[in-house]
Length: 186
Image 1 (cartoon, rainbow, N blue to C red):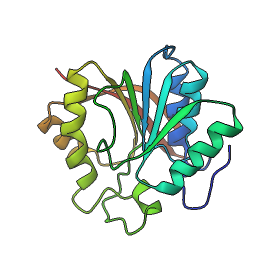
Image 2 (tube, rainbow, N blue to C red; image 1 turned 60 degrees about the vertical axis):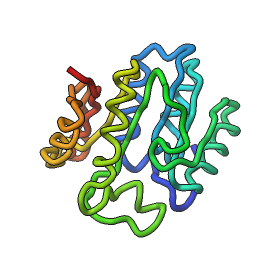
Image 3 (cartoon, helix red, strand yellow; image 1 turned 90 degrees about the horizontal axis):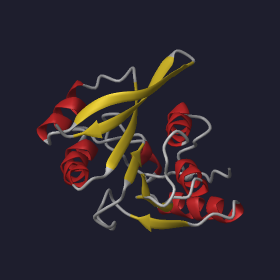
């Protein structure tokens, strides 16, 4: 997998690998699939290999160029969209994966948007209401977060939209836990 400068590197951070590993345990054949915040597109490529109809989106135009390059190099069909969260995306996907930024700083560049959620966790403030409507429409949503993260403010924002987290996969690497959650409504 090629990773261009300024794009979230899926080989350095185990969160992407854990999400990719989890996607191999789910039947994706014929399903519509979105990797929201795709970075270099590793999860999108796995979903395409497993027969999903894939859209990879990112706010970073460099990431979208990177996904296109990797899809072409692997002979896979992946549609790409430059989008700030769901702004430019269709209303329904069968499966959505998210490896969100969660550090509480304001991003100053497109590359920083892969790490920084805003000083008030603005990313999540905007994300959860939209996810709630998609989950109500039958979408399965998976999110990966650091197990070492203070999730209390994120959990509270999710609860305000009626969303709860259930752990489905965990991995510890170099002392840091990464966790894949399925997001659901009661």
